[in-house]
Image 1 (cartoon, rainbow, N blue to C red):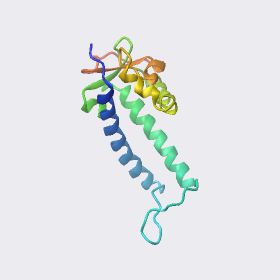
Image 2: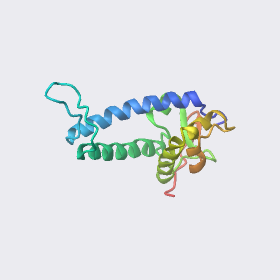
Image 3: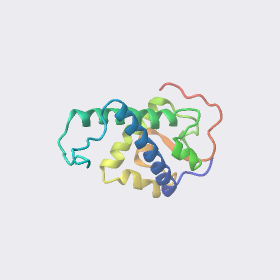
Image 4: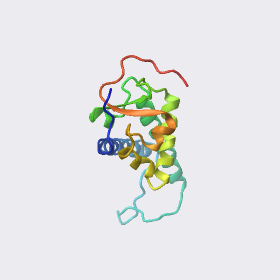
Length: 156
């Protein structure tokens, strides 16, 4: 695999992922009673107070985000649905499938990439191997191409 997933391709994949995951989170949150509140006038509640509803939705979103991103990127598919749709896979620096723990580390490292004014994400456009800060922290690459055979990931 010699072609690395570039910035705009990765942005497109992320948009697909956010839409799919957002729909799933809303459905699951509604099932557990953490849906959006509607006032007696039928419009969305404009209250910005932090409630148990927000905490429940946040917890569901976090767990589903970990399951979606870390689960799929460490699976034999090696990609989220957005990355797969755009022909990319996530690997370690040797081109092998990553473990669930490494994928989870990558997921949480994205927080750092975003908190610093998204500079960690913008780095993808300027680094030789198209790595964001989260990729560097986790020791991962995003390639254009098929998954790397049947290399089983270890539980790191």
